[in-house]
Length: 199
View (cartoon, rainbow, N blue to C red):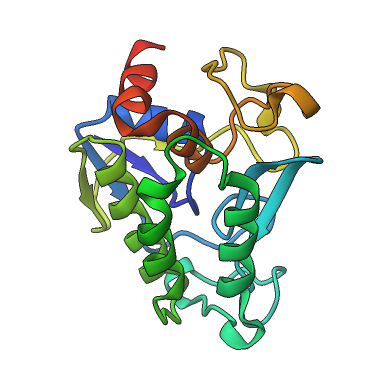
């Protein structure tokens, strides 16, 4: 079993860690931290890495429990992110297989960040063709919580990156440890599964 945090379309290193666990437990009491991936993911663009952020009510400096964080849907961030993802990945070989699923997820009128992240997690698990069991109960255990050592400020320092052909690699070079979306769009679910298992 692995205890860990929830991430918004988590990094490749994070999803790789989930692959190794048979049971994954997400702590619903976890506190929101502004420097993590709870409401942020990083994709590739023609100009390099690009942050996609879910706006939250009260701003990013709050320290409330994740289950108490509300998404600020007043800015229509979902439409903006759908357009950005489409613009960046419309040439990716497998994008069309995932486009509708991404649209359905982002257009879901979730107001609670925890609920939305759990929906994203279920979707990612399905697309990565893996069967880790998701548990959200607060377990009484001495097992340490897995904290992804990579943050938006240092995610590229991933020591053993999984290499694959990226959409903008010729323009900006290979960018390691992006959102799981990048490898799915570029490689598809079957090859993504093989790559995550082989490293």
